Image (cartoon, rainbow, N blue to C red; front, top):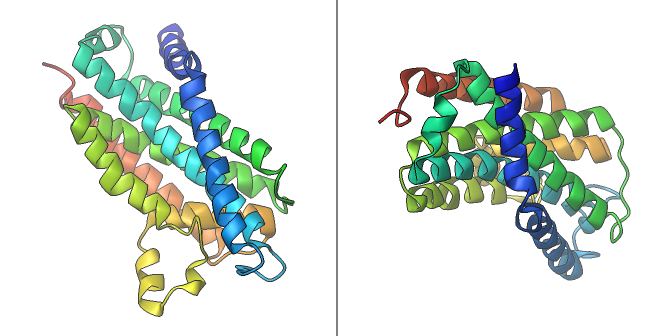
Length: 251
């Protein structure tokens, strides 16, 4: 397991060495979102009975930070290694395909959870927040970061240039997270858009994560977790298939 442990350590240190950019910057961004939106909408919008808009917003911002940073960790690492040409040194050691994939995904989970925890610790100073079901909070944070870490792995393998990866993130990841209920409850939407929201897998991650704090959700947390786990299994199978075939990994 020493090869797997070394690759995992390398991927964790890769983002931790520049934590000012990879950890602190997302925390500050989330705090700005909270300050702006809660200032405008607190007292005017009550998404759930007895829950202020600021409190409602915090879990969404935490999970959004977890998802986006987990995606960024694997995708940026792979594309940088491919462009600089040092990916070959990662492929040469006798690692199994599953070890290669899991090291990248677990490192992405570490970054996602660390950033999410940072956002939570900073925002609770500004908004009173309870945690009704800690198990669901942890479960959705782990599954969500694994899901987006795997998606980032696939994007990193597919992309050949930074602009391709940026397009993947700007036209798929960012819209999917922003339209997943981070800033609103889908019950405030017209019926047609409520239906559309149910086809967004990120919605189930946000909604289930928020349930862990308030015990209230738009969809059953068990159903949301089922959707998340099925999506994770499908993406893991795709990612593993890409590694086994050597798609865009071997010249």
